[in-house]
Length: 318
Ligand SMILES: [Zn+2]
Image (cartoon, rainbow, N blue to C red; front, top):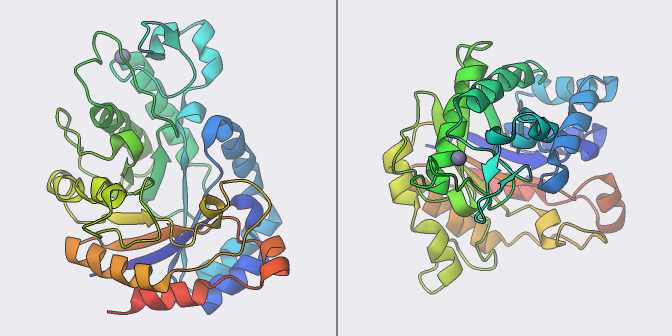
């Protein structure tokens, strides 16, 4: 049974414009998503300032007043583990394949001090997100970069991500005992972890980034999509279906634009969306969400209001 239907939007697109679109749709969830990539720490810091402003608080009141839950989803690791700590804490950072400690992405998940540090930072970060539900989405870095040190080399990328997410959750729980944290099954970490178990309170978030969005996700003749869906049963076995969420790209105009301007007109593929929803439902996912970036007010001036209402209608059809 699907309980949550939502969309993720960039903080710089948040305002009355999106509040109205959301209120008129049947969606019951909106998540704020600062951009990932190499600048993720800066875009997150900017968002943490923005959520203190009247403009944001007014948006939050409008959507929450209509029963739409507010959450935040982002690549957090470069904020949780400041890259400048490299000068004094080199062994907290990942070892690359050439055997060198580097502070580009992620961390060494076999270092207990580094894990304790990111847990403390997670508690601090959780307190900076006004009106959030008990669900947290503090993701590892947006890169295929994990640790190759002697202690980590027996761990898969998914194992490494699992260790990190377990520690993030333990930190957040010190300030919110009801907290839950996502395991983002995505890119290198899309396979289920094999050597590390999720702690109580970790839930599955499945984001098939490498899919072909022009064909249904379970199209038997699409190799890209088969490569994404073949992990689902194993993921559900490890994490359970309870609180599981799909994070899709149906409404992600930033992806369709190649993450750069100029805007192109978003074409919602209703046929693919309908088939995908049916498939995810049979797999037991409880929440269906999609990125909805690059659909702000300046997009609407050029191309009209994006098809959010239609998107939400299809999410609700059985
Ligand atoms: Zn390591």
